[in-house]
Image 1: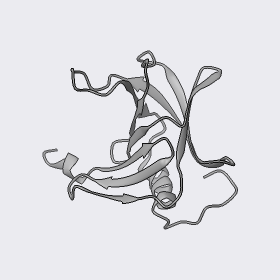
Image 2: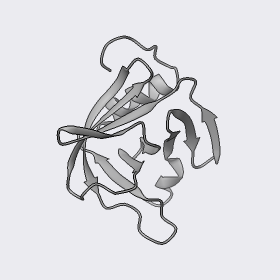
Image 3: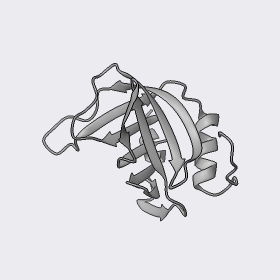
Image 4: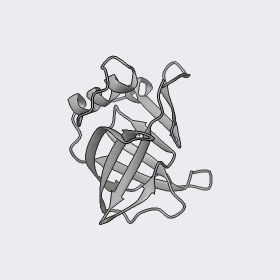
Length: 138
């Protein structure tokens, strides 16, 4: 739909320092606690707390990596608060084609497979402090 991307909300994370970004307003607001992402690929978790961009409107995550994961690969994403891991959300995803071009960041684009607006809204509620953190899985 034209103009739909103007309504997108993003969470931008630079290795634990997260900000909420509203594209239509061009403003950022800090998230008041550190946020990390672990990307489980196969039996390994090679990407722990990389910089990432989460588009909660589209159910996609762009993860900065030196070497992109192979397209079509299945991954698990664990959003958590360090240093003692307090899991906020665990979702499955698949690696999809990311941005191409000379000015594109190096990384991996992941489409969340079990994407539901309710599930991502719950994660947003934690990040926006509308919902209190608890010691159980989100």
